[in-house]
Length: 511
Image (cartoon, rainbow, N blue to C red):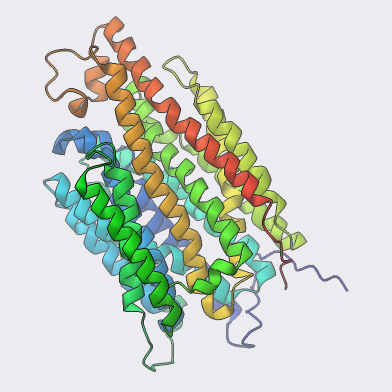
């Protein structure tokens, strides 16, 4: 008799997890997987829907220098919220955490939708991000609850596909809304989707029957949040808003270091640590999350700056700039689903992230050649390579961690994959924004018209393309050159992730 498991087919009854025979009805499992995939899509859209709208939103509220904060605030809050939500879902059940997170996400959307300043936008994005981080990791943890390890591969591939769809649907939807209505509506569009997700999750997931009082590691949660926030803020402000030697930057560094020491001491004694230190001795936890950190830098750097390049350097509309993320989505979908099917069939997975990160390295390296003369078809081809490089890392990484941690830690283990990827994304986006901003200021010095009030901070695609041809070309060349270091560093990160992949100890997936 073969020991290989058949792949999961969502159109057919799905067997329940063997840990509790008879606990999961196949129809309920199927509905639950569909519901959490939709929830993951809903949360992920919040990350990407603002990317194509940012040039218009920033021009309306003022401040090109704030452009990365709209993304960074969301990513920072998601990074902080992910491990906390993962642990709470282990303690109190997935359903309660998912429904609570939907409420938090929508509260942030209300604040952003009615915002009249960048401060309100950033505050709303922080609240949204906290809810989204909880939604993403808890959705993925549900798969670990419902399916045995061998069958999680394909299901996690579908989850990765939902995440990939958001990378394109979000920018497209955001571009369409700002082009035909107002940027405020990119936040209000979340409400019907959130309400539907809340109802479906209530139907699909069981409530936890255990009502006993749990020990929550509040001190660990606060210290972990302090560590992550300090890291993101230092990367965002250091060398740009404030010099590296500024007392504020040094104080943040000292605060983060003190929080790290306190976190280690607290977690050693906590009955239910928010992030158990024993996980850092787990090979899959270390290697997958190290790769995820580096991949997050490449992914969010691409999503943030590519639409901006297309609008300024190529003169395309916000909606059209979003369309150029479609090839990346196609590659990500194919890579994620394909890797999931291979895992379910073979029960092995190590080689896939190694090959995919090598392809990602080459694709990001090709983007360092971007210029105003780059053909759009070549750009689309590069984006397919980026997507194929990202997809397998998502599905393989979560499955590898869930296969190596105790069942009682599936929530926090799953959260770690998202947390480290978002740390890389937030720090990478902030760092890339600083590099891009400095390069842009240097490259455009003396090329901007004297009548342009506010200089670079008020520059828009419309302003650039209204200039005389010679001046316009100089600005486009300077803009393109400022992006080259961003993609070069992302390529180096992907190469390092590829090397780390060889260190992964593969544990065959059991059925």
